[in-house]
Image (cartoon, one colour):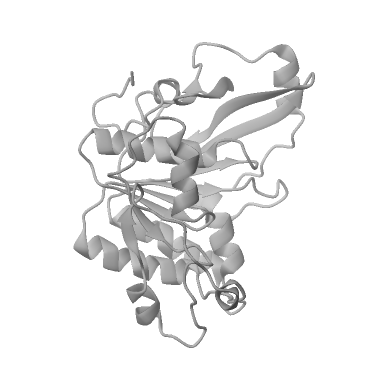
Length: 277
């Protein structure tokens, strides 16, 4: 059961809603960061599923994994993901050409139901293609999609891969800035999934996103321990204490009333703090 406050967008995770004092402020972009296997995609799909339960339209932009793999990964959780729409821009899904225009790239978007996603049959030639996918081309795809369908929730998985795929000629900082402004102006609650940043640098998304949820996964006393922190949440009070988190048989669970063990907290604090601006 979620604990959403009026005027907030529930995350679909009761404990996280409590940490956010009722959920996300709608219509804003937020970062979800963590290491590999920390639960970033699980949180994202759970957020979209909650929107679908409430009668909202939800879109998953798949960059890191083919839709069929995402579907199989969440099937074991017993979720009905049939109404979640997916924009498949996985690098091996299409043979993008460096010579095509942005308009032609946008026209190649493939939107369908996550439930109906099937494994693609890829030729060796397609696997060798380096797609022309960037924040700029993704923004154009989304603009075209939003002109046809009104969404209230979107997850982009992941910004890390999107930046790595960008051509050398692209101004990454300005392109990401433009994409995030576009999402805000579209009045869509967006979760931008990303790897942990370099602790010595401050990337543009850290500065521009209205909040950041960070997922932690670490080995403590020969056991994997998970926790979650709200690094920032503009325009709202929020819980600043790290809380225990697990990925159960039915999804992510955040224990918002519990504190981490002393050993877990000390291990978490051993990580260098992120820079501020």
